[in-house]
Image (cartoon, rainbow, N blue to C red; front, side):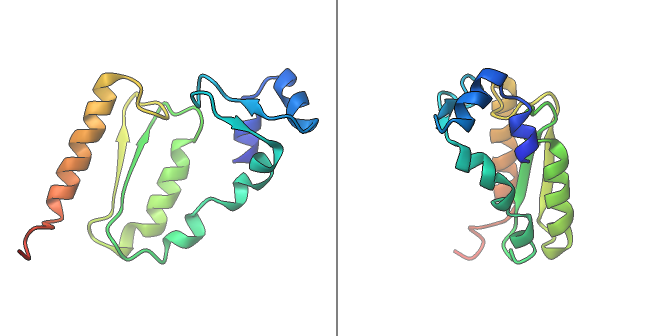
Length: 126
């Protein structure tokens, strides 16, 4: 994961990062400023090792054109939880980027999320 992030950062920003200065990842991260410890620890905060303990239904949505997080990460996460709950689902948005910046992708994510939540029958006990 660390290497994926660092491969997208310019040499100039890498130099700033290594000298202790924060760097911005705009426009991809809308002006977030990050320091070296973020990149040094990113590989340790991936929840894949914890996912096998999740009992609640999980919907993973990922864009296949995400240039920050490879879709393979979501596929791997889904494979970890697939058999834990029959309602677990992986949904890939064709053409979707990391933040679903196109209106049609945002609407697709909203529709899918509502459809999935409705399928849980959360109001059936009332």
